[in-house]
Image 1 (cartoon, rainbow, N blue to C red):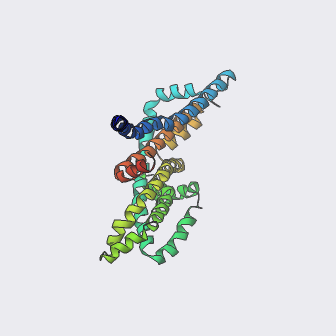
Image 2: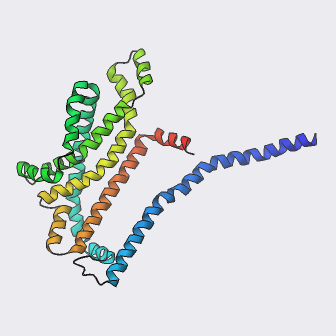
Image 3: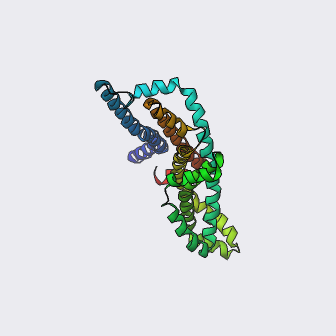
Length: 287
């Protein structure tokens, strides 16, 4: 009788603790996991900057050849207004061109999914388009369309269109055939089946392509500015290179990288907002 009571009491006492531990365990692991994602790259970057600073100081390197990180930072801050004025046009070209690419990718990917003939005829051309160097196309677009915003948008679109389209097409093809057959047996047409099954299936693929292509967008905008523009980070780099201001060239490169990272991080935020169920599923699979 005593043993039974002890067993019940110990089970009763342990149960709430066990439940609380299980409930707290995933969040605790997530809190520990978050710094582990950010800390390693920060340590690597810090180490590289330290080596760079030490080398330029110890070897007394000419700053027109290789400026120190501290000089890049100080001169970049001193010329922050000029950098900001150059960043705005590049950001505008990036967003506008990527918006055009976004719309075109959805239209073409849907066409490829609905039409076998379009898939056979267009997809090889899309792959072949990736063999054409952007640096060769950009000057032609400037010649044809001038120095305005539109040719820069086209360059960004060409740089980002294929990853978006290819990932969307692969996402549509990954739809569960059983779910599609079930909907069709319930009388759903092809369009309704596409919207209810194929589009949700394509979303993870779409955001994967979005993350890849958004970094290409900034590079495409800078390439377009190198080919011909009135302002922007590409023009700013060219001007500072001609003036042998290597420190400001590095500062502009750092701003370009920061812009790419910010847009890349934005895609993660958009994915979390648009696909909340994916995050819940990931937590369930990897507590």
